[in-house]
Image 1 (tube, helix red, strand yellow):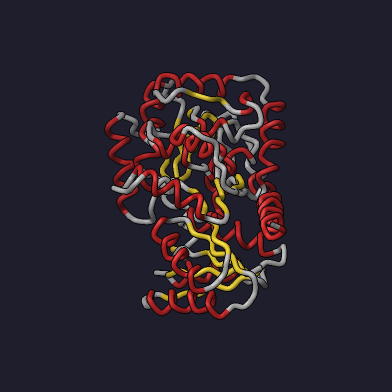
Image 2: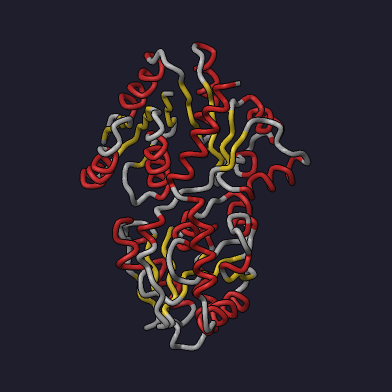
Length: 369
């Protein structure tokens, strides 16, 4: 089966979206599927990182350019049109889904849509809720990336999905993150993007309520001055000078050693919004759960639906007082070994290998129908 990921990628591993897509589909290629991507780069070093990664996957083709976006897109579409084998087009945005439906009138292929934070488009754009639901029913298959998205669908449409779908949360490189171990040093750690809907400010507000020997190690954001300015502003707002260790943007290959390892607790804040509560599949949670370090996270369906058992991480209400309280519980817990073992056992089912096996079975079952 030829699989065409019909969404332009920002060709840098500093993009969480690109990291997720490249790894998910490269692992899927091991099941005798040919994968096609396209995207654009700004820095040659970033492009080289991605090319070096996909070089190990013989069934993966990447079309790319620095400036000529139209030419690359046409090459990608031409590859679809020229192929005479069974084809799947995977979209993740309503504009590309519309184009895919038009292409399907010309030739026969399968259309899947991945559901991500922006997928329930009527929530964020002036578009029809009913039209969105009809579009899902027209698709050949829907890939939910968190069970909480199905909960949200049931809540919104007062029915269970009656179209073909599968739940495929983000993958994780378990062995890589197992190298991160806990230290009883009162260092709290967060790594990720600083999008407003992720509510990073909750960490700073909670830290102000904790004893001064608690400090925050934080990394991520964008690879530009705006992220440091954002952290500096929060540090000043909550009077936390001397308690914040901002590492800046850290390469994915260096996250375990430079950021996660030797932390006391890993933090996952989320905002009071639909994306945080239902639509996200928090990549950071899977990576955290593969470490040997306890986690404090906001208790929303997007988190709890990932967990095999609720007590494998410390769950908090979305307010600074309770978040700080859960941090204290985690820091003062006498024996976390059993909890960590349960957490690690749970997250192994979300490995890239297991994800690709489930995806491959979905494709086979679909073809058999």
